[in-house]
Amino acid sequence: MGRTILRAEGISKSFSKVQVLKNVDFELEAAETHILMGENGAGKSTLMKILTGVYRKSSGKIFLENENGDLEETDFHNPKAALEKGISMVFQEFNLMDNMSIAENISMGFAPAKHGVIDWKAMNEEAVGWMKMVDLNLPPTTIVGKLSTAQKQCVEIAKCLSHNARIIILDEPTSSLSEKEVRTLFSLIDKLKKEGISFIYISHRMEEIFEIGDRVTVFRDGEQVGVRNISETTENELIRLMIGREFKDKYSDYDETKERQVAIEAEGIITSKFDTPIDFKAWSGEIVGIFGLIGAGRTELARVLFGIDQSPCGVLKKDGKILKLRSASDAISNRIGMVPEDRKELGLIVKQDIQSNLTIVKLRDLPKILTSTKKETQITEHYIDALSIACAGRKQLVERLSGGNQQKVVISKWLSLKLDVLILDEPTRGVDVKAKAEIYEIIRELADQGMCVIMISSDLPEILRVSHRVVVMHDGKITLDGLTRNYDQEKIMHAAIS
Ligand SMILES: Nc1ncnc2c1ncn2[C@@H]1O[C@H](COP(=O)(O)OP(=O)(O)OP(=O)(O)O)[C@@H](O)[C@H]1O
Ligand SMILES: [Mg+2]
Image (cartoon, rainbow, N blue to C red; front, top):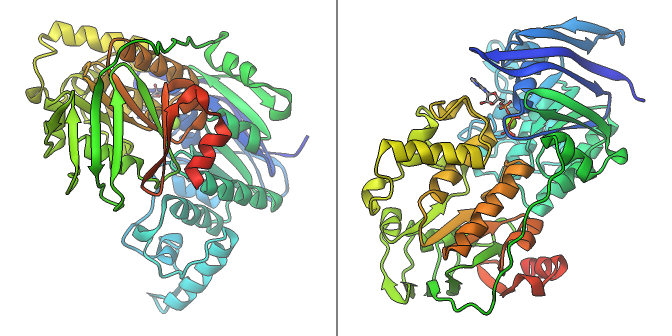
């Protein structure tokens, strides 16, 4: 057993009348990576926000190791107070100023000054020191807006280090990183751990939990339901703890003998970032998984199929007829839908409730599907139930939902429209295991009813599990296309990198 440096005892938290944390205990040791797991809305982010002074706890105690090595009761009234005690958090949406330099971002609010003015030279030099620690080899004057997601994350971590962080909290840090960037992050975590830094790591990705974690604490419905050493637990046990029962998802078979029509087809189209023409076909009744590393051109292809971008050449066809799409709303009128990748672009109106968000998809452009308020209520209730959206009811404001539950609302909105072609770009990012399985189930049902589902995913096990056909992209080109069951992980990965 290592040395405990942080202990939270009996933490409870209520928002107005809803109790979202119930008497939760949590412990962190020096130099460990402690995973937090739990379904969407279980309370993980809320506990972290309490530990970093963003929210105030309703009751409970927090103890933190002091200079003498004793645990001392503390309470953070604001994030600055937590920072000063060495607790930093990297939020999923990052907290960086895109128009400022790396050095300015790192020293934000704490820049060295000489005679009352910022000492730029000292600031840049100090930044280089922190940047070295996170292996970020760029000039400190580089503008943050130009960095990749992975590099921005390094800047965030460098910023934590500059505050002498002893505890760094990462909330779903790998959700928009490529495989290679994940490797880099993991070796950085290992390196910093050796220097005595502890990590609290929130994740829904089973594989990485077993790779990076030392211990795991599981949350269910606002309660802490178990703490395990990673080396002594299994995936099944963790799932059981998370959802309170055994869990198996159902598979539906793909009937290859069935006659199918090509639903959507692209011939010789060019996407915004690449100049190789692409041919792509998807049949009704099938789920086609598009795999590739981040930057392979998958989203760019989807943007053309959904009318956001226009190809200067080639043709698009739907049900055999030439299709001219000038905008996304053109696509929707042609019964093509898309769930975009970026949560911020998801088209959620966070100041409105779940029901409005679920039912206002540019209805003008659609043949009347939702007709009455009663029907809308029914549909909303149906999806809240089907995807276990953790909420206080269909009238809850979307901004009050946890990250994963917001994602579920977006997906529900598109699933409920019963279109002919539905493109899902990374649909299960940030979604818990159980909801993932529920989403897969719904996608399969929709395909069984004849919908053509195009699912872009960087999660290879997900592609293998869900899609009937797999298409792999690399560098703007399609490098593999075939029935999923004829391929294994290795072959697909190979096609994605060469
Ligand atoms: N400011 C708020 N006002 C009201 N309710 C809130 C607020 N913030 C969070 N909640 C509710 O608290 C519950 C826990 O949310 P939290 O964000 O901690 O979940 P989470 O475990 O991080 O989930 P996810 O995996 O989806 O990120 C949710 O039901 C959420 O709707
Ligand atoms: Mg969260």
